[in-house]
Image 1: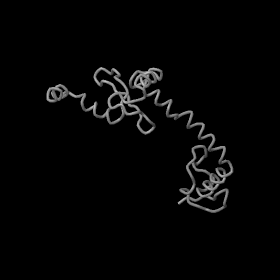
Image 2: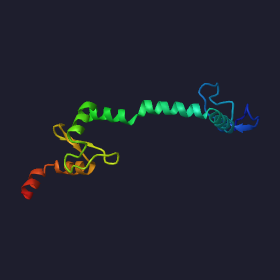
Image 3: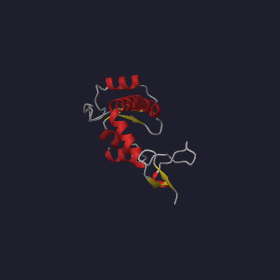
Image 4: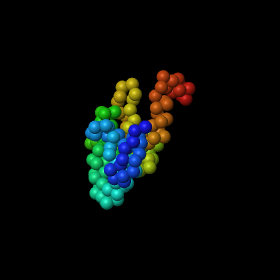
Length: 147
């Protein structure tokens, strides 16, 4: 078994105790895993506020939920944010079927015809699920039965 001496703590360890590093000649760092993690921990503690600030900026720039919702509505249903807002306003921020008001807990779902892709309106989740089941080949039979 090959060994190496850590440049930080001076102890001798087997090569498996040294992290892989593609930039070095033998593919391993010169510092053992314990020393590397201690240095990382110390660096994080010393620069915590800067690191968290950069993470938050990156997250909001990359994963902003409202921007992502706009993109997915455009991609999945072909409607812009303006069209979505207009539909919301026309429905008085209520479900088109049960007329419950939308809220942060009861968010609008875009209801569309799965065959044609045509957007019908905004529904609450329970109504949207019921419509999805009703949008089946059995629809005409169900309508005849209920008539």
